[in-house]
Image 1 (cartoon, rainbow, N blue to C red):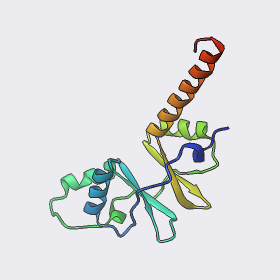
Image 2: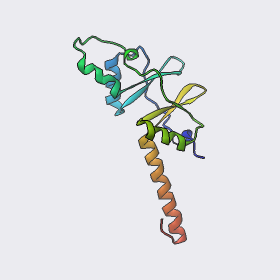
Image 3: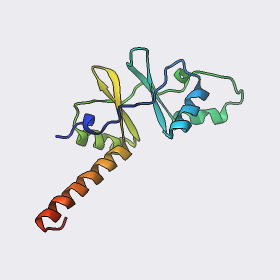
Image 4: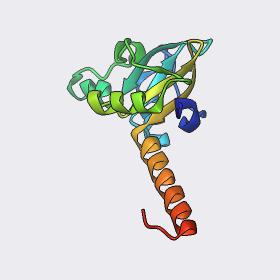
Length: 139
């Protein structure tokens, strides 16, 4: 079984509930990501803020500053680092998520995106091709 830990990114860009929403947007743009885990001071996951969540700002007549807490989705689907990658992948597909936070003992330790899974599939295919080439077979 391949686990989430095997392919997760451990350098996760995140924000807190108190982060200014426009700072969160700048962070998303600067890091070319479509969502950010929201954590508290001890890295406990408390929500996620995504590009979909901040679309509400388009209709905000008053350009008043607000915090991530007012835009984030508080109930987040997450996985443990030891969870099966196949189950995680199915959940991404079935729920149209782009990414899921990965936890260890309730604390944010990584993130897995669709792109990470695609890279893993490609790497497996290349490895299989190399093994078959060694044996004189085609994949």
